[in-house]
Image 1 (cartoon, rainbow, N blue to C red):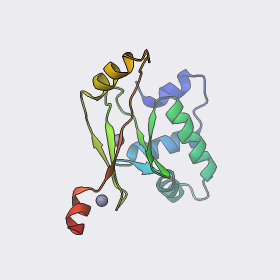
Image 2: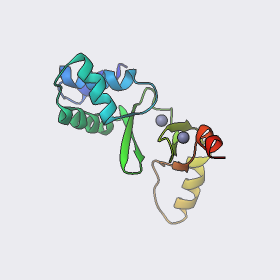
Image 3: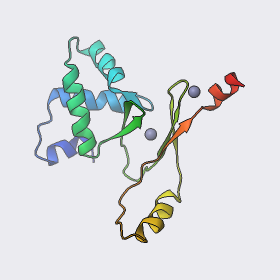
Length: 140
Ligand SMILES: [Zn+2]
Ligand SMILES: [Zn+2]
């Protein structure tokens, strides 16, 4: 299903602004901050409202069309193309880059620990902090 159909399915209006924010996110390789998306959209639509970008990103996250990745004090976003593509993130403290990693046993491992205390686990978000390969080499 076209991801944008999900907006319509919820009875929400697929405004040109929402479409713009979503396609800017989907076109962005990797993870984009709201600021990066604002600049990308401003190239096409000068004067596009920053608050619209922020509000639409929140909406897309709520609808499961985007994921928010917490990078310490800032957030990055990525489009969710396939619901089964569950991955975790590594954030470099030096250059700020975000890297996807897949940890197949993560959910099972945390679930077995949480079930012992009666917690019904739905999802795990892991953000690993450290230095990426390039940064750890240049600091060595
Ligand atoms: Zn780095
Ligand atoms: Zn990611």
